[in-house]
Image 1 (spheres, one colour):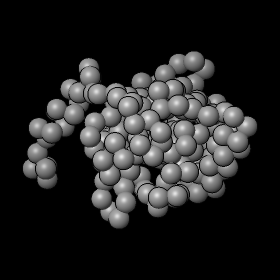
Image 2 (tube, rainbow, N blue to C red; image 1 turned 90 degrees about the horizontal axis):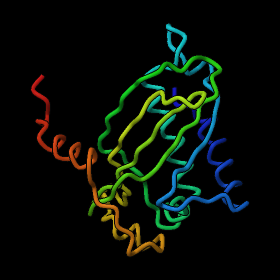
Image 3 (cartoon, rainbow, N blue to C red; image 1 turned 90 degrees about the vertical axis):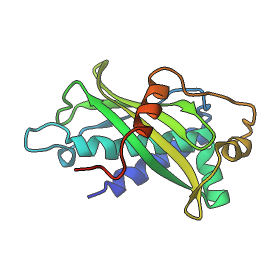
Length: 180
C-alpha cells in the first residue's frame, strides 16, 4: 500500500521548512531523512526494492515543495509524471536504519527533467536512481521552458551530458513494447 501518512507528513515538513527559509534552488541537492519502518521491509528483513522507488517519491516531493515548484503545481493545476527510470542497488537498508535521501536535478531538455536520487545509511550509498520526469497539464507533458519561466529561472540551462545523455540515447533504442 502507498504510504499516504508518511507522504502527507513529508509534505507538511517540507512546507514548514520552506516557510522557515529552508529552501532549495534548482541547482541544489535536497536531503531528507526517515527511518526504515517495518512496513518497508520484505521477508529478508531489508527494504523492499519496490518500496525504494516509492520512498524516492517523498524525496522528489520534498524537492518540489522547497524549490517552489509545489506552489506552481497548485496554482497552475499541474501534475507530475515519471516517464522512465533506472536504478542501481549497492547496500542493503535494514529495518530501523536512518536513511537519507538526496535529490537533485541532473539535466533538463525541452520536455523532460532528469532527476537523480540516492539513499544513504551511515554515510554509505545504498541505491541510486535516475528518473525522466515531467510536469503535466491536462494529461500532456509541458515544455520545460514553461516550467522554468514559472519558477523565475527562464535562463537556467542544464543539458544532458555524460551518463545521463548516454542513458537517454540507449533508452531511445529500447524497443517498445518489449518483445518479451
